[in-house]
Image (cartoon, rainbow over all chains, first blue to last red):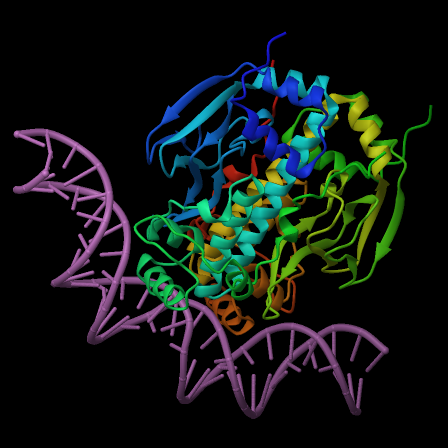
Length: 247
Length: 247
DNA sequence: CGGGGCCTTGAGGCAATTCAAATTATGTGG
DNA sequence: CCACATAATTTGAATTGCCTCAAGGCCCCG
C-alpha cells in the first residue's frame, strides 16, 4: 500500500489537539475521499439557508463565519484557520444558519457527508475526536460572547488577536511567522465595534509596542504582555486536554 | 415489563425537537439509570475547572451558565429550561469552562457518563438526536454573540425574552403560562448591559404594552409585535428540522 | 415588622459612534 | 512598470447610548 495523500494532514493535526488518535485512525482520515478546491479572497462558501451535502475542511488560508442583524450590521462569529472543519454542523442539521466567507485565497477539502459518517461509525476514536473539536468550537463561541459583552474595546481586540495567534501556534505555526489577514472592518465586525474606533485602538496598541504591521497583516511582537492586557487565558480552548480519562 | 419512570420525559421532548426518535429509543432513554436531585434558588451546580463525572439534565426550573471577565464582570452565556441537558460537554471534554447556577428552585437528573455513552453506542438514532441538540445549542451561542455585539439595548433585551419564550413554547408550555424568573441583574448580565439601563429599557417596553409583570417574573402579552422589534426569527433554533434527510 | 434584596429614578460623564474628508495602500490593465 | 481606480486606513469634530455614582422606595420573607 502506498503512503496516502497528505492533504488532510492539517485536519488530523486539529483533531489531535483535543483527542488521542492512533496511527490507524490517522490513516483512515487521510484515505477519506475528498475533492480539493481553491477559492480567492472574499469568496462565499455558504450562505444562510443553504442545504450543503458536503463538509468543508480548511487546508490553508483563513475563513470567517458571520450572521447579519436586521439593521444590516454584520457579526463575525468565528475565524477559522488551516485544519479547522468549517461546517460539521450539517452532518446533523440540514440548513446553514450562518454564512462562510474566505478572508484570503484558501484551499479546501470537501468531503461527502456519507463518507464522513461512515468513518465515524467505523472508528469511535475519530468520532470522539470530532465531538471534542465541536465542543471546543462551542466553548470558543461562548468566549466570544463574553468578549463582546463584557470587555472594553482595547481588551476585546487584544483578546481576539491573542486567540487567533494561540490557535495558529497550536496548529504548528511559528509565532514569528504568524500574519493575520484581517482588515479593520473584520476586526470591527468580530469585536462588535465600528471600524473607526478599531483604528484608534489599534494605533494605541501599536504605540504601546504590542502590535506591528498594518494593511491587513498584523504581527504580535510582545505576546506575553498582550496576553495580560487581553484578559486572555487559554483554558477555554482545551488544547492538550485529551479525553483518555474515559474508560 | 412495567411502564418506565417518566422523570426523563422532558429530556425526550427536547431531543425530539431536533431529531426523530422511535418508541424503542424513547424507552431506552426513560430506562437510563439516574439520580434525581433538587436544588434551591441561586445554587451552583458546577464551577469553572470542575471535573464532573455525571451529566445533568434539567427536569424543572431554570439554570443559567456564565463565565467571568477579569474586571469582575459576569457574562451569562445560556439560560436552560426544563428538558435541556446542561453539560453534555463533559462526555468529551473533562474540565468545565463555565459555571452553572440555578435561577430558581429546580430539579435534575444526574446520569453517569458511562451509562450515557453506552446508550449512545447502542442506539445511533439517540446519538444523532444528541448531536443535533448540541449543535443547536452551539447555534444559540452564536446568536447571543450577534445579539450582544450588534443590537441596541432594547432590541437585545426583547430578543432574549423572545428566545426564552419560544423555547418554552416548543417544550410544550402554553404562552399564557410562561413566566420568566429573571431579575434585572440577570438580564443585564445576559445582554451585556448594566442593571440600571436594563431597568429603563424594561419600563419602556412595559409602556409600549410589550411586557407585563415585574419582580423577577415577566410575561409577554404581545408576542407578535415583540418579535418584530426584537429582530427575532427562530431559524437558528432549528426546531422541527429533523435529520431524516440523511441516507 | 424589620431588614435585605431588588427595583426605580436622576444627574453627570465617558466610551464608542456617526459623519465627513483626507491620505495611503492595493491591485489591475494598458 | 506606470497610471489609474478602488479599497483600506487615518484623523477630526460633534453626538449619543449606555454607564457610573448616588439615593430613595418597594416588597418579599423571616
